[in-house]
Length: 286
Image (cartoon, rainbow, N blue to C red; front, side):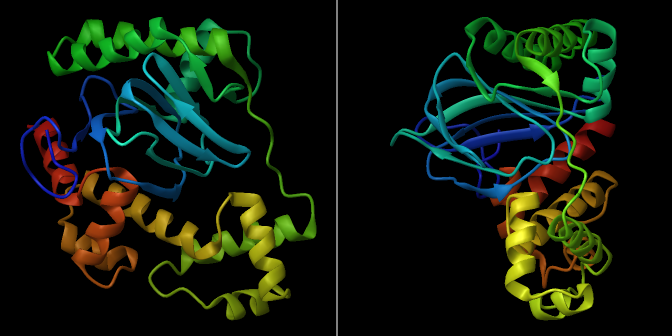
């Protein structure tokens, strides 16, 4: 296990986390953790979040309000949905999380459901101890190196959650002028990640005003442009670390000033430091 602030073994009363991949389960990240003081800032994922809470209370801030997830509950978050997370009680929370890719969920949905279009979860929070237990079993099987059980249990867990709480993912095609400007702003920020424009420059390039762009961007993506850019930089840094890039080189490549800058934002958003994250990736390939 890794402490959130660095390396170290699991210790009662302290925060710990393991964020890893199992080579036999492509398209899936796994996180098992206990957090007390750690707070996840507003961010989103390009895949799904399926989190089973096993202790304490997790508070998740979503576009339509805050939910409180306790023991035996499952939190389901669709791709690109901005959210925060923090402890809802002084003792924090413990959970076991699956991060399946959109491709993996699409394959399971096509085989096991009648959902049309991109699969999504219509419910964000469900008290479902059986599903929560199944998510925990996926982790245990992966940690034991039991590929057959891990793959079977993963597919059973996702299929069960889709069957009980699934629906089609709503289309997010930009229709208004503000939404189109927000989409163009996002594309420009992706292109200029290491040298982003100011809000005023970005708005001028798009033929709108700074406050109009700020409102439109937040409405479309759930966070202002500067917060989205930090999240996007961390996502790209993860891709580089997955490929074996050293954290210091990844920091510069995505536009952070130095490795401590990357460390701070990466640990807050991903839940583990970049060094621990890369170490788990290296272990997966050996």
